[in-house]
Length: 96
Image (tube, rainbow, N blue to C red; front, side, top):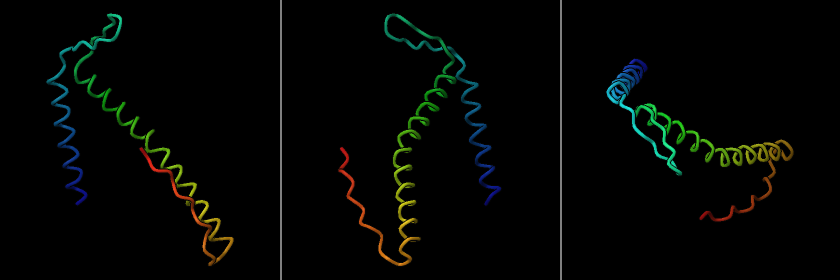
């Protein structure tokens, strides 16, 4: 199974490398006030992919930190009570 995973990763890497090699033509990214920037298409796509991944991680960080605090609180309550029920958790406000 491990070998199959590495073969698939290598195949995906080769496929993406070939895609980047075929898309080296510069594209123009236009900003406001007639500002523009010419960059290869593959670099632009990679930049937007990395930016999206970073934004996704930042968006998930709040929930992750909230869960870690809750786990720490429950662990403290378990150590303190040794069998007693932990205090009730207040309900979270509804999201948008």
